[in-house]
Image (cartoon, rainbow, N blue to C red; front, side, top):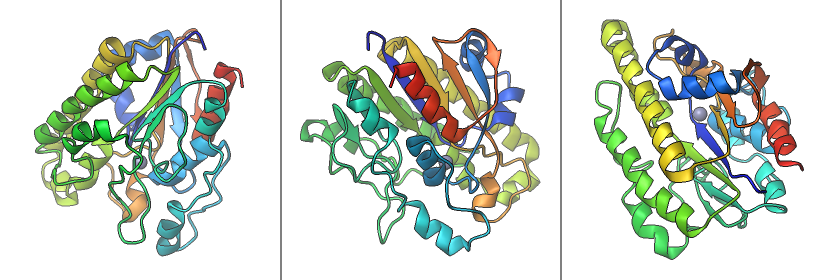
Length: 290
Ligand SMILES: [Zn+2]
């Protein structure tokens, strides 16, 4: 591919919030120049299921009427044996940084750094076994699923961690130039999960302002990644599902059963078009000519 493509997956970026906030000037600019819209998640809008739909290009077979236990056990065991990245890597150089649920795969393309993985004991497992040894020092400074405690009243520490990621992302992409690079960002999901329901009820104004600030951070982070590090010709941002803690909190996955968003820049003229997450799979393949 004579063009470089960046796929940025932002966990739990909420369509409604993105549409309401004025704090995301960079993402707004990209959407106004390209294609964008509401992105309906999988029937059960959990991270691994939603990403599975994107990877495989079809609707999930896991439906909301199954028991919670069964849903959770199923999520990290989806068949992801021939994903969109396997297909793209037959034609292009592909690099993956912490994309969920791909950690146990054989190598794809140039490099793969594991994201969320399933483990019998720990669903959210830090798995860097496939990481080339000379990158370990960068990863070790990044407690992705580690000790950082974060909620909407205290996001600074986690933001600092995300800014530190630029060091090793930069090093990896400099040393391994790829046609297609996919990167995952979890701060919105992690922060919303950590925010207590009682805080949403008791301090709605503060939570609203903190959410606003969180989205502003995501916007700045994306701008640096885009302009200073990857400099892509084609850019796709998508979220796997929405997560708005200002809405009524429900149990388990029902608290994030909202729509995410996507923005495609570098191909289409200004246009709004709502999609389902599995449709992005086919959109990316069409863009890449496979
Ligand atoms: Zn998610």
